[in-house]
Length: 117
Length: 117
Image 1 (cartoon, rainbow over the protein chains, first blue to last red):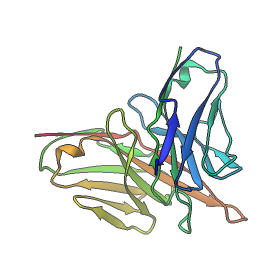
Image 2: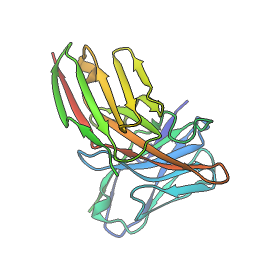
Image 3: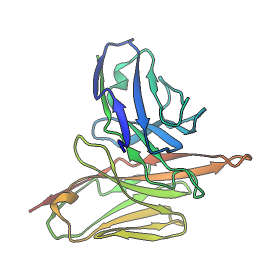
Image 4: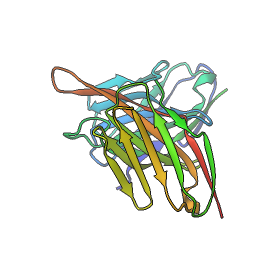
């Protein structure tokens, strides 16, 4: 299994440009998450999804959009990039089960390092 | 609201012990612990569910006091490989009438652990 994969690994955007960060997992996990991590800081949840077609906002959703058309893929869209969106973006996935959400290990992808100038 | 971790940084020599604390102002459903090495993705250590359980894995263990909304991570006989930044994540959860779980996992700011030979 490849686990959680993210593309691209690095990207530089100009202010006002848009892009999509790709995330895919091959573990058949229903739950998927997007986090951002600013230098020296913890992870902040942007959006999450409990299954295909179901998404919800996390802690810092402004400036981002997500969609979940399949179990495997969970892309994150940045519209009108701003310098404040310079960060490392991590995608993660986890099992779903009787214990409920946030009761299972999250598997993280390698991250996308984004710079907006 | 972000959980508070203490201390912010710890420096150890190999073989010494350390405790990292995590406290929240909210009622918690679960507490997650992850370790992140520089430039890498977070790696899962353990999850504790409400119920005051204590879990362990080799020389790393953790406790969760649900009433105090606190968790502690115990590292005994530290090894060089323990160096990294440790994050706790605290989860709050709600379930709608349809039985679907929604919630948030919020990470602390991290504790930098450095182990010297």
